[in-house]
Length: 297
Image (cartoon, rainbow, N blue to C red; front, side, top):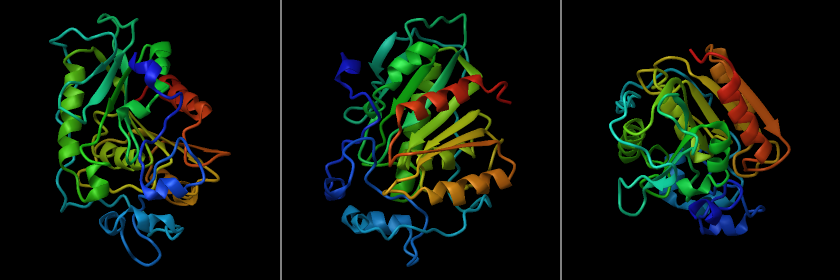
């Protein structure tokens, strides 16, 4: 089965030269998505320059993050919304079937009933990865009666990291509508989550769609970009490893978390003893927060 073929933890499948020299062999992303380096080079410049540039520990600082929205960028508003399904879902794990090649996964718990609206956890992988990297999450979804959507990015990582929002934004909207067409989803319990590059993407996209996403979960993010309009104020959970050598913990501790908190967002932050990874206890903590923190709106 697909689930049995997965590793037990969130892993990254990239085979870049950066990964070959990294100090850990699992639960990591190979790119360093932060807004600016000390030399003034932006994240996109690094991507264009190739991942080998990221092997040296230059990416330790960034400009002050801001929630002042950029009105010059493409709108990040998603159209998909939960409603009355028009199709019967496949229980268990299935391919989305929206694209050949890079596609994504949908997990609907065996206990799903159309009579009881389910929570939805949308999980965005790290650079070089795919939806199947959320290895332990189908079991976690089953245990909680939660629907899991894990799409693949169109390229090696999410489009914003490589330049600007576009194909991934469109595909995510399709994947969400695919899910809403099959499952009765509780509109007050929809989380957009991600790891590393996926975490940065989730924060950036989520704050423009707070009327859709009640919660945002960012595992080891590097940055976020605010785009006009900002809609709603979803609750935010951030985790980061103290020993992260890919994206330093200070990016979350001293940048992302205080920026959102200072603007009135409800932020929960957990720092753990580890590196660039999503330990099991952090996954459990994030899901408990998502499903058990009281009314979302």
